[in-house]
Length: 224
Image (cartoon, rainbow, N blue to C red; front, side, top):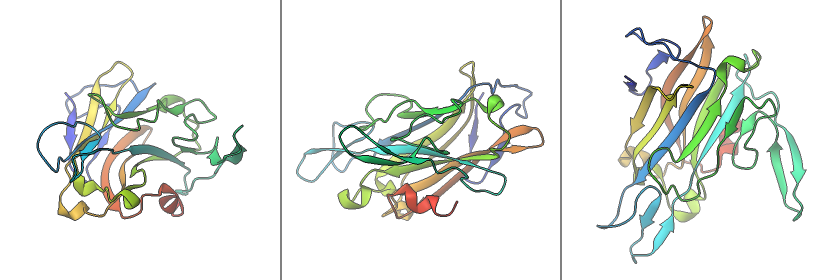
C-alpha cells in the first residue's frame, strides 16, 4: 500500500516500513490536479470557468532538474533552432521539460505536454530509470509551473487535489503527496513539488510543496 506523505516527509523508495520492496529500474513520477470551480457544473482537470462562463485552458507543466553532488545543474544544454526559425534553449541538457522532453542519457523523459489537463489519473508523467542513472546525478528536483499563470491570473490557490506520486516498474504505487490550494497559495504560479535523491545506496523521496510567485521555471533554475 502506498504511503501518503505530508509536507517535508521523506521515505525510502526501494523498501518501506511494511517490508514491501519496489523495482526502481523504471519509476513513473505522475502529477495530477483538479481546478477549483468558480461556478457550478462542468469542467474537470484543467478547465476553469471564468466569470463569463467561457472555458479557459489551465496548463500545468512538469519539469525535472538533474542535480550533481554540489546541487547544481551541470549541463544546461544548447540552443536549438527549429525549422520555423524559433530557438529553444536548454535543449538536450540536464533539464527535462516541454521543449526538451528526453534526457540525452535516455534514462529520464517526459511522456508528453498535457496542455489542458483533460483526462483521469496522472495529467503529466516523468519516467526515470533510477537504477541506470549515472552516479554523477545525485538528486532530481520535480517542479510544476502554470504556463502563463501570471498573465492569465491563474495560480495554485485555484488548484485542488494536486498530487505527485511515485510508481515502480510493476505499476505499484510507492508514495503519494497531495495538496489542495488555499489562500496561502494565492498568486503562486510555480512549485518545488518533490525530489528524489541518493542516500546510503538507495533512493529517497521527499515531499516539498514550496510555492513561488513566478510562472517561469527559469527563475528557479537560477538557484541551481
